[in-house]
Structure formats: structure tokens, C-alpha cells
Length: 390
Ligand SMILES: Cc1ncc(COP(=O)(O)O)c(C=O)c1O
Image (cartoon, rainbow, N blue to C red; front, side):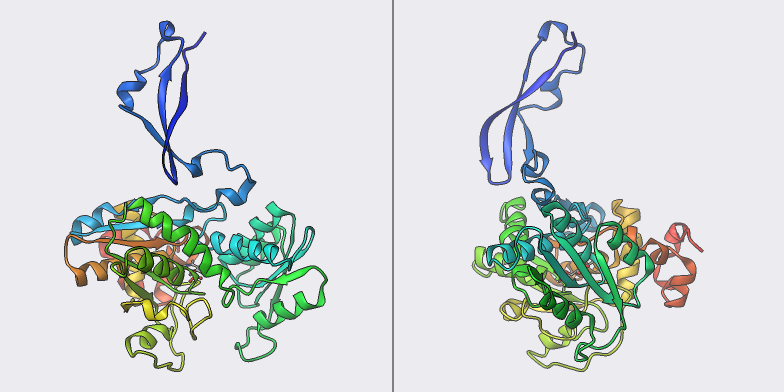
């Protein structure tokens, strides 16, 4: 008979961890390393690692908070990244997807067998597809027809009905968001989840991301920064951290080129015409969404991050931290480094690692693409060995 070790729950230490003490049985047949020596005291297992009893949806959230060791050493601050790429759908948007669907359920807007409709070109669609399959809903996605076939194929293979439509401005009734709304109105038992202005999105981060960050840092956090797409993440986390810390945690929006929010925040309310563009996806905004409006005045400031800095950080995160991240995550990390410089050494700064580089690899690591965007020079010379695609 082989020797075995059982874990026995002895006490609940905090909301997101449970303490287990290893006990040994069949001690006479021991042939494995001494467990007590390997784990003096106890093993701590987060709830996310226990059985997700409600299926996939209960595995959303409770992501690790990773110290970026090299960047922390270089800046003299603790730079911590919330590993949202570890959500089941691979991004921070799983949280919003779950909350907008459960909000619709609570309000009686959708019943079993119903249809969720959303306008999205990215991660929200993937999050919704997972949540809808897990809960037994149908999913319809409208997106601009400028998006890659890969994105359309992925959503379709996740069970969604996808309508690529002409890419027209928001004020045109044929814009993909308005078409999504009308589609839901035509069906019985269907809801348009409206991620940009549905504040259940922001609520996801007030109820989950914010408390997780506070708990994981033990309240030892000086600043938070991240970018805005719908603004659910920046608004919800800012609202939570400002409230729990009595306003002490400083919160900064990180903004790419082509977004109006940096100017809006730094000029205290001037809404400029949208101009320019960025290689980052899922972030940058032309207006103050309903998710951002209640919390925009809580922000201490905004940080502008040019694409050169985001791209440099894609390669540095890979080489120095072992983190394979998309460009919006790396814009966030670059903003955290800017903030570290602004605040000086000794501070703890948290940001969001929104998703991995998997969906963007054919661009981010392609020499031709980098050249076409005039970004090849942004990759430090010694990291050119990561540019493995032509
Ligand atoms: C890759 C990526 N990063 C960041 C964001 C921004 O998150 P939020 O919509 O909460 O502002 C998104 C949103 O779609 C995204 O897809």
C-alpha cells in the first residue's frame, strides 16, 4: 500500500483562503519526502483552487496578484499585476460578462433558454460565450466587419451567432452596438447586455476585483492604475479602493493615444475631438461611459502611455518577468512604472494584467507588422531575438 497524505481543514483564516494542516497516515510505509519539512506549518489554498461548485462561472475571479520582480527592483516600488489572464475565458472581461448576465437574471430580463445579445469585437464576447454556454443561454454577437476572421471563428466555435456589420461611427444607427440592441428587441426572452453603459459591469469590480486586491495586499497598497475600455475595471476598482482606504489609495487612469480621457481628466472636463490611434486593443475611449461617470472625479490623475512604451513593455515583461501579455496589459505595466517614478521608491502599486498575448502574437512578434507600425525601434536591441515571426 502506498503512503498517502490527507489535507484536513482546520480553520478559516480569511474570506479568500482556507488553512489546511497536512496530517500523515500509513506512516509506517513512508517513502515520499517529509511533507512537514516541505511545508512547515500549513498549506494555504485559495477558494479558486477548491471545487468551483457552480461550474465555470464560479471559477471566474480570485486571480493571483503577481509581483513583477525585475521592474520592482528597478523602480524601488512593489509593482504588482493582477493576473486576469488566468480567468477561464482568458481575460478581465469574464468578470463583467458574468455580472451583466446575472444582473439581467435578477431583473427578470432573461429566463432559462433565453438569448444574450452584445456588440463587441473582443474579450467581452469570449467571456459572454463561456458564461452563456455554462448557463444554457444562446449568444448573439455584433461586431465591425473590420475584425479578423480569427476572432469571428473563435466566437463561432464557442457557440455564438456572429454578425460582422459595416464599421460605422457610434452616431450612425447601423453601428454594431445599435444593431445589437435592435436584435434583442426583436426577440422574446432576450437581453442586450450593453457593456459600455450597463453599470453591472463596474459592479463586478466593486464586488470582486477591488476586494481581492485589498485582501491580497493586506491593505498595503499606495496606488492603482489601469486603462479604460468600457471603464468597468478602472471605475469599479477605484470606487472600492477609495472607499475602503478613506481616499488614501491614489488612482490613475492609464490612457493610450487616440483616447480622449487623458485630456478630459487632466483638463478637468474638456472633451476633445477623438484623433490618432493605438495598436492596443480593447482600450481607449471617445466618451465618458455610464460606467465611468460616477467615479471619474475620484481619480487623482491620468497617465498617457505612447505605443512605443507599451510595445517595449510587451518584450520586457516576457524577458524579465516571464509574462506573455497583450498590449493593454503592458500599457498598464508601463503606467505603473511611470507612477513609481512619480511617487518615488517604497510604494506598492497595483495594476491589471488584462489578457495574454496569444490572440495578438501574429502582430506583436512579427517584424513586418512592427515595421508597418513604425514600432520596431521601440523593441530594445537585446530583445530582438523574440521577434520570431516574419
Ligand atoms: C484586452 C483588454 N484590456 C482592457 C480592457 C478594458 O477593460 P474595461 O472594459 O473594464 O475598461 C478590455 C476591454 O474589453 C480588453 O479587452
